Image (tube, rainbow, N blue to C red; front, side, top):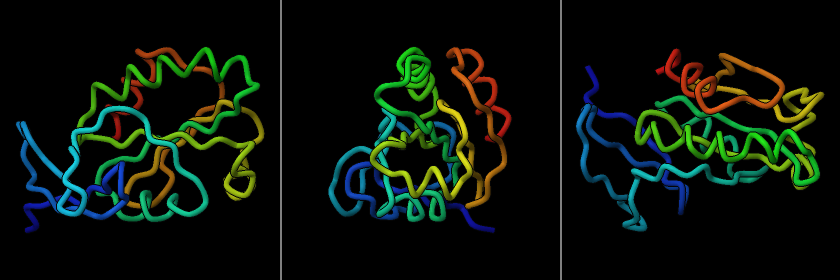
Length: 144
């Protein structure tokens, strides 16, 4: 039985193995030394998307958005607030569909914002439209 989970550093994108523990007070990246308890959504794109999704043992929650999108702007603070509730329980990331249209095409994004949750590298949930903080938290909790 494995007592560790893989977590990708939000700063340097290196893979870290940390103990499975409910009360981790401190966890730093073995490569860059920064905290793995990062609770802000990270911006990802073509170069690091697969590395993060495929190498995270915790759910990866991705907001596909664009800077011109009104509902995306409305949802952004809710996504940020929800991320703070899940240190080392889920990774929150954002993909700017204007900068990374390939990812939008790859995942069949037809409207934004679209939130997709990946677990063990596989899409397990998708919802289109702006979500409030409570809805994001409840949805993510179902996959932890």
